[in-house]
Image (cartoon, rainbow, N blue to C red):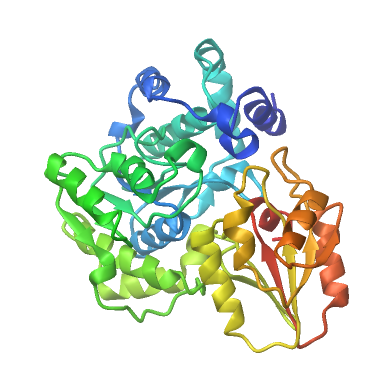
Length: 404
């Protein structure tokens, strides 16, 4: 198989949470343990940092990786989902994994994957670990896919565990209360390994503290630290919290790596060029001011929509699409009624029909038209908007993926 055939096989033959939802969620780590054993335990051959959380995982992972790169280290970065190309998920010093490595890895291990019915996510984690081990990275930043306790990445023994924050997302898998979700994320806290909590709430702090206590893991609450003023290429208001989390994590890593003030400064400043991160309050145009953002749950959207309102503009145009398991009752009330909406369906099997989204949005006083595709909705917003207007594109990672 060539690269396209290989990735098509990975996507289509095996359930993948991003595409299919519930059927891709595994109830334990049996498969992952089988997989890493089959691959001769690549996860033990490099140092790692493990990053979980409802929002901000990708930004936080990328900033940590960028700072380590600026300090001169060879840094693996594993994130999900990808926007354009599967290979975005697995990088070393910003360079994506080669197509050949992906093809060869699948070809060599396909009989094992088929015999054990591994999920897309399990295979991808195995691929990342194998790649980082063979490339002999100095350290890898590993982002959790979903949850923590049962996530395929949760077989590593990191130098530091990080939990960015807790909000409502994927409640059908992780639980319908903040404390249940926090318990799942706290599953990455391991014996004697320090853990950094980015943001906490009254309901979540005791859960993190109790788990850290059981594991005798030193715990650090980054939100209690003073605000940091480093200039950063990531411009979203929500990065204020993520930067605090990153700095606390870097502080703990300084016993293991030589990282100075200049590395930190450059790491924040060069994070996009160092890691290829896209879709985080990404400014696409200045006239009309056009921004896309991958925020897709109430916790993330609140901050983004608030940031829009800080801007001065004549009219607001919102290109909006979501996936079909999104809790619309929790996100639609957050959107401003005083805006023109362009509803669309992201081009994935889980995308919610634009007409259905339009009807549900109407119930909340959000008025606009439905379009057949994200690009058509975006085109129409561009045509309708005047120079002093504001265009926002979001609601789902998959909507942003189609326009960046």
